[in-house]
Length: 212
View 1 (cartoon, rainbow, N blue to C red):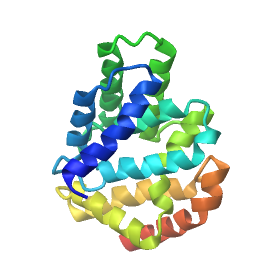
View 2 (view 1 turned 90 degrees about the vertical axis):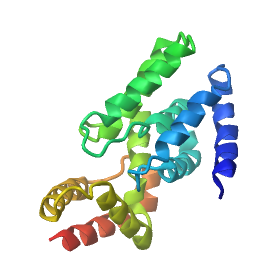
View 3 (view 1 turned 180 degrees about the vertical axis):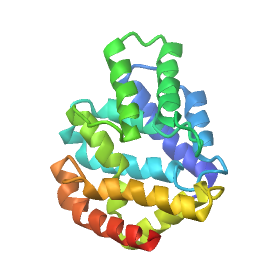
């Protein structure tokens, strides 16, 4: 798909989302997000990841309390991505917060929930709300992808951290994957448990062994 086709397709969805929040089209923000996801240092944290997340969201909308808030959080959750930054999620959440402010959006509860949904993708704290659990499961859906897709995911992550020496990358990556493997269950929502859990555990075990 050409860039102009991607822009047209994504903008149509974005406009519908803006309408839900009673906002104007905000094309400049849409275009800025797409531009961010096309940055050259990205290989996994691209629009393809966001698009895949939206597909998973569409499959579980009935499980969410505020599905449109999850959708907006997904649009923003990797908008700021610098491989060696420890504040990517917070910076992305702040961008979403500023977006609401620029639009004079007055529902502070919505703003706070979207901010928190983005922050939960740090994967450092336990998700509490049903929407937060869905957000995490959607963000981690790549772990349960078919083996060949998952293998490409690992290659893409390595590309994003290509400046890290191999022995350091292997250790840190092994630690991260091992933490996910030890989660029982890995996914919080029954839909993802049934659909992705088994494959995710197999993918993680294979990847960890390859890093040994």
